[in-house]
Length: 337
Ligand code: PEP
Ligand code: MN
Image: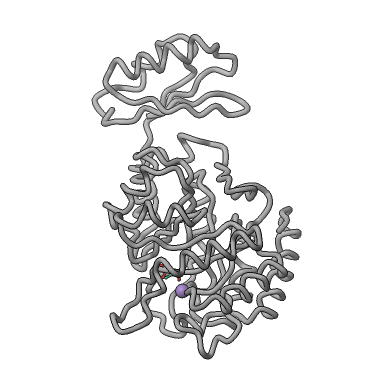
């Protein structure tokens, strides 16, 4: 249930409603917008009728929320959330570009790629140190060594870093090196991991599962939010369908659907979304046109020899061209990159 306060509701009236909600055994979640304050009632409030709250001073109306996700819902928080990461804000009119290799492979590879993506206009460096691979015989990532290399690149180039964390035990360690923790598609419903990243105060980018509905993605985000971490971004990275021409089906629809349902920033991953480097740029353009708040793109200096995801990795010059094209689309829809 949400309680919409009157336009001129006083601080005392708002505090009175919060105290009343808490006296009933629920939690109150406050969202103060420019126009008015909205108070979310968290808990199983089904036995209580909205009219119950409408009698309280300063209340305009109380409305039941039909969605199962609450803290993630735009009903609870009508304004867009802005996630701040060391000087980079995600969820404003500026579209944020995250780019780098799928996996950190060596110092030379990371440093060269990081410098190139920065030069091309990327705001955040990506790179996997712990890799969720389909085959146990495939390259599994450099682990701690990869985190150290990411730290080196971050400090040298002043670029915030995003990297994946695969298990709850690694959250504290990865959080010491990363500015944003990535939860991979295969871990979207790893509830122990969602719980663990919910308890730290580091931005999290949650990727949509291979077979997950939009509602399941939002419920996974709800796990993180409900454990106290409010700095959550969602990522559309393609879903599995009957189509085999591409690695995944990049669900462009998900971007405006998510924008309507949630206040959380939405990042689009055209690399995993398509699995083919040559489809990255058209999909990135489409994602920006559809309202994505950011892009995450795989870039490699020598894709033919990449240790993971070479087929979908752009060479640095192609990535620079992608950013330029995405920038033109951003301008057409009233945004910048
Ligand atoms: C990745 O970002 O390299 C990755 C493994 O992504 P996903 O979890 O979307 O497959
Ligand atoms: Mn990858």
